[in-house]
Amino acid sequence: MLNILFVSSDPFPPQRLDVKVLFGEKIPLYGHHIDWLLQSEDACDHSYKTSWANGTAWVGARKSGDSILSSFTSHLYGLLNDFKLFRFARHRRYDLIIVKDKFLSAVLAVLACKLWGGAVAYWLSWPFHEEYLAKSKLPDTSYPLLFKARGHTFWFLLYKIIMPGCDHIFVQSEQMKRDVENQGISSAKLTPVPMGVDASDIQDQEHNGQRELIPQFEKCFLYLGIITRLRRLDFLVRVLALVRKEVAGVKFYLVGAGEPPEDEEDIRTEIKRLGLDDAVVMTGHLPREMALQYAKEVDVCVSPFAPVPLLNSTSPTKLIEYLALGKAVVANDHPEQREVLKESGAGICVGWDEQEFADAIIRLLSDSVLNKKMSERGAPYVRAHRTYDAIAKFVESELLEVVKKNRQGPARDAS
View 1 (cartoon, helix red, strand yellow):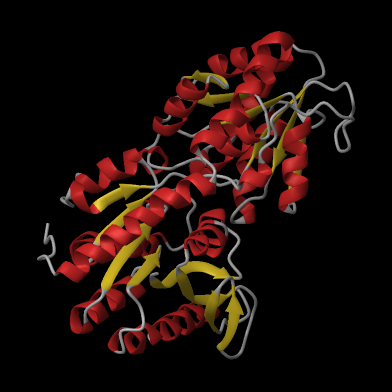
View 2 (view 1 turned 45 degrees about the vertical axis):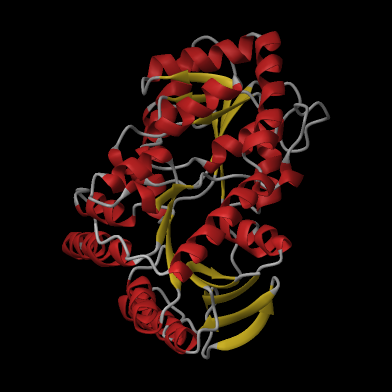
């Protein structure tokens, strides 16, 4: 049995499936114990300790408010909470410390394990340093110099201190692995772990019942996810305009909200410019069950990822969720999406081109036989390859190997 300390940027209680389900539910089934260093999602004046999953969570305080001072104070509270890992490492309470998507705290973990021994792994789910640098170049970004400074600082910490100092690194995709290798990190230290779904979310058949949220005979397609300018989702509004030329009355459901809210402005502007106010339904943020209900009821789901380096290394959760729900998908040529659709046969992969995207949607809206055939392929593929039951078995074997190598005392890769 392993004793693991999990330190993450995810707020408490965590909601992302790769934390909540993979480490909160599945890995403990193999007999491993996991404790947590997390920060409160809600405003909280004091840190506290509580039970969560099969372990203990030390939850850091959080300052209320959206000001720069409040944000800085909350970051400071989170960092102070993570300093507990020094005490834990000194007393060798854990076989392994995993740090997910935190930079300063990962430096602390590397230092603590160098001082007192023990294994440390880093989990990179998103290229945050690249996102900050990309945001610094947007024309209307507030504080571009701050984003630029954060991007360069996090790049340095990640590739010059954290990754060289860690025993192992988990990344989100094969493309992210290649990107990290290109920064000089040894391939032997890298393991891709793509996003998955909880097995309970899988439906073997397409949605056949009465619609609850969408008019019964309406032709429609859907995008599910956060809205950011970096994703360039106004692309889908122009796709809709092309689809409506062939499919009268088609509706586009955009399920999600802007993060930040002003990132919805490009989409709203494009809707107004093209006169599509009556053809687009923007639901805003919804509880997960309701968001997935919308996805179950539409005819086609879409997964566009703008062809930019920042997004190429992602592992799109929405694509796997669509397939698990038994939906036919249209996605553009993105490293992981291309591979998943090729292996599953559950959708159509096209270029980042408005007409190609529109033609694929029109084809699936018009050909019910093809739509049904593709819809039926998704769930079996997800069950075989992308449930957290299957992913947990693989990750658990990797964690055991990391700890085994650390106990044997090999020299760490300094690449």
